[in-house]
Length: 407
Image 1 (cartoon, rainbow, N blue to C red):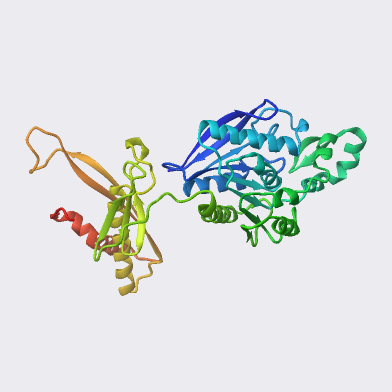
Image 2 (tube, helix red, strand yellow):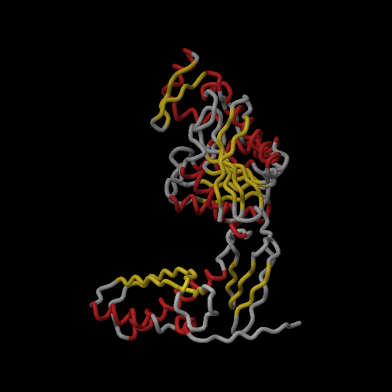
């Protein structure tokens, strides 16, 4: 299973920057670097959701707080767009030294502009993704435009961004003034995926058009229909992550899994992937999934355990049997949920056990939830039927397994 690891590294101004590395189970397909939006942090919903989802797709993602933001050290007032780019380069250096150079750069809002500008300095970059990115760095000044005259006159001002006070200095305005990202986009030597919401009220869709026109092929655009600028809805963040994973497989994060074996008639075929100690393909007809063991016993947590599949078969068979019976009897059964837990219990009375030695038996605990307007008698009858499902009965009966070597 994916895991989140706290990381620290030195930023461009010498301050300690706080980061999180989302790691997939097993060997990562690639490493990605994620830059968050202006004045936000690495833990904003969009950043955390996209990073964790990508980890589930096998891509390790480092997200960090820029200098002076979130849990990072430093004074935000002394930072600017250029220092953010420098921090990105430092983050890439840390990944390269501690893990693996990032092949994928992902940026949200001003972070998207930053990864476009930083790509030429991060030599390992194979692909770039922007989400709601502006085509001009000075677009961010619109968030505090009422305070710009005061900043120009006094050299600084405290502005409110997302309900929090931030000190903005004139040097910040000078740094972003006239800073177009179209030139940087046109000079990209890596494929770019531009994601933008048509109804983005913070950074208009025209910014995506400008970046797309400026960039050279291969370039792609994904419309985030119905999303807002911050990807507030979880479904929008997950959609972005799923698209990025599929797109990056072509350019920056190839799927290392070998093709699954061909199915066998009337059966299941299992084959080692050789990418992990226990990882196996499980193929049933046209459906291919993974089997594995937990990391605690040397596995990669990349799929269900063998006993997990047994428990899943019992639970699925129970649910299907109840549905078949309820429909046949026209019972008001709206939904069935079956939870199965497996463990080995010691037994004191066992006729077939060897004398003087403790014995264990396999126990499957089956919890059944029945939803619908059912009478007590109907519920009891359904519980009785649950014990008659084919897999349940197979597990109770003597089973013969014949094994032979084949060419």
